[in-house]
Length: 113
Image (cartoon, rainbow, N blue to C red; front, side):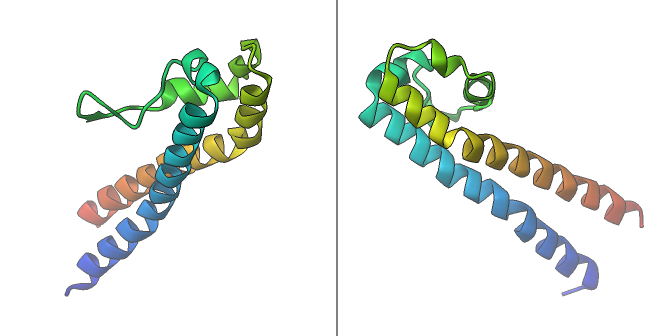
């Protein structure tokens, strides 16, 4: 394997770690919200991992958590659940975006190096 190919494989692996972590956190959050706090899940717009066979972008859920729109709900326990998971969801979301962006920048640099 060439050094460039090895570097790309290493960078890809490193970039995917935050994405996998975010996916795990997201699945746990959505399933916990839906199964334990159905009123809050409805208030959040019924977020799911898969919708019509396609991966759902979670931007609206991150916005819901970031702007603390969950406080507008009447479900006290659901609001507490959202508040407790807010930081992990937001942080892992942005880390996955930045790590993938860094990987693509690395690819561009490598292509012209």
